[in-house]
Image (cartoon, rainbow, N blue to C red; front, side, top):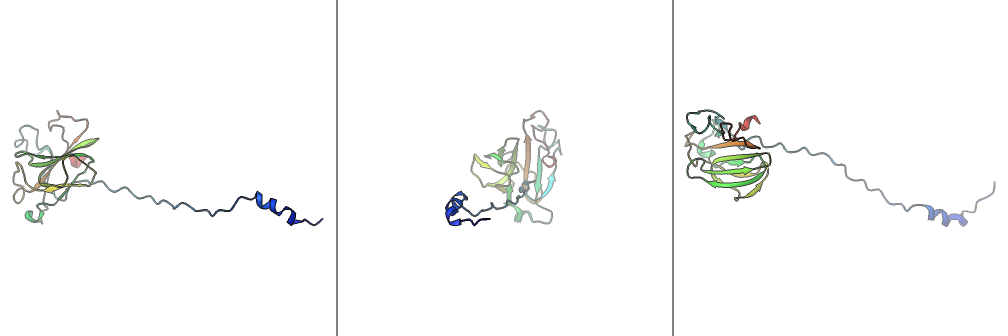
Length: 179
């Protein structure tokens, strides 16, 4: 075996090598769970269930929504003005009705519409885009409220799936607690 003259070939060996670059590994993505959708627009007890009292609602087959009132252990006055959250995403319309629902927010979403009524105040402008869990108003007793608890403070909550089935006896509303 003969000796190899490295000095003669060294430049060629170096030129054939790829330049070294440190590898930067991408950070490992840890999946973040999707937030739980808001199931109800506020804490409270059901004070009037969907479909109850058809005698009070002659235009319907019964109550076309669910009423949520202050929990039994809470004073209605302390609870009045609590935050109301939307449970669907869409365009929110704020409406002032001197009778009926009083101050209410009607949200038009892709798969359903949502009604949040008898509010004491709005917290969004008319025509705003809202996402699930956004605060849209404060609970109250505006409009035509039958006393539920204290002075009638409660939230009327209705959901209308699309396509609207206006002939279902409830003008398209379904029980939002059974979706």
